[in-house]
Image 1 (cartoon, helix red, strand yellow):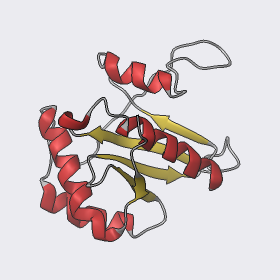
Image 2 (cartoon, one colour):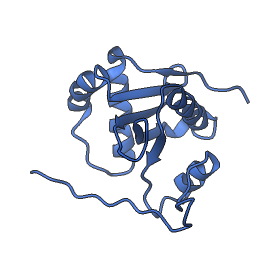
Image 3 (spheres, one colour):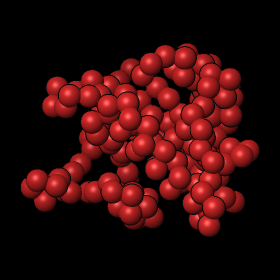
Image 4 (cartoon, helix red, strand yellow):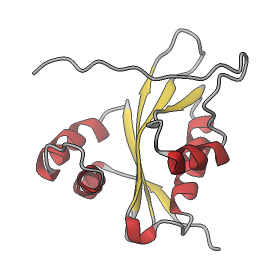
Length: 155
């Protein structure tokens, strides 16, 4: 199987990224502010140093949205894979794997120390996918299960 082309999104791709993020949330019945609002936010975020997106396929059929943050425990930043999405009709073609491979390569080359991703417990397909690509549900040093907790603030 040929590897899917993956490229880093530019600010000019904000509309494409916004549409895919909107489609992702719509597919899984999650709230979305709509593609227009997402595009406005992405123009700002993709223009800065702490957020980037990778697009897989041509035309793009998959994406990764990543944010970087400093972390006291590592010498380099930590990348949070905020979203990974492949359009349903393109799943199983290797686009997601190609995006993860590019993410790991780019992160390693730019000094990122760790990549984190949050997965819902019931999403066994995503858990298997990430496990195949080196992400694990257990802490490597203790074997304890890892959990992600969150609290939304504001209105």
